[in-house]
Image (tube, rainbow, N blue to C red; front, side, top):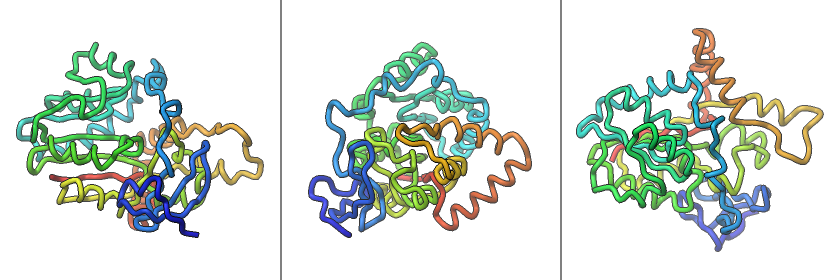
Amino acid sequence: METENRSRPCPACQSVVARKCGIKNKFDILVCSGCSSIFTSRLPAADEVEDYDAYYSEANLTAPDFIAVRLRQILGNFTPFRSSNRLLDIGFGSGAILTEAQNQGWKVSGTEVSAPAFEQAKARGFQVWHGTLRDARFDDGYFDVITASEILEHLDDPLGELTEIARILRPGGLLWATTPSARSLSFRLMKESWTIISPPEHTQLYSKRGARLMLEKAGFSSISISTLGLNPAEIVNHFRARRLSGEERFDRVATGYELNERMTVSPAGKLVKQTANVFLNALQMGDSLKIFAQK
């Protein structure tokens, strides 16, 4: 049943018509009737906001080795966009992108709302800002490339963030971003039980169409979006005859890292991953949106 959602429009396309698909952590979960993006009916109250200072610790401020290998490949694709040679990573976390980009000769900068992550990057000599992107007050057209990995699903104002990104990118500059996909096979099978739907941490997941509409409105004109990746371990866990009840015990990060590492270290694993991604992208059922957008 479709209902009018007057309290919060769709963050992607601004439609006020959505259907309720469930409840998660005391948040109503809605699916937009206009673009099929998923979002919470309300934003978190002050006492519900995710504590990102507590999120990072010594255990997760170091990225696995296979992440560096993958980032080396991704960042190698940014070479055609070098002009001023400046690259910004929004929400840099462990600093893996900053590290690899610097290794490839970029002049790197970063923003991060988590104090422990900020302090670690600062101690390592990176040029970083503690706070939101707007807090850093960069000049117009300052960067060649801006990266935002797993950021857009957290934001109170994603369109405003993308508009600010477009402002500080030079004409022809590149935004590379990743964010969970609302139309993934995982959501289709598990609905609100999918661990990626996790308010107040994640308040929206975008469909490919919704992400494109939002990017266009923010000022991007050349946009490529792929839907890749899947965590079959979570799907198997969800459908086990004997399910875990009560607490959310499935560790999506650990199992995702384990699967990606296995698929990266061997030629056979790489082939399986590449083949799976061809089908996931063709069917638009991957867990993640991979965004390349030029200003």
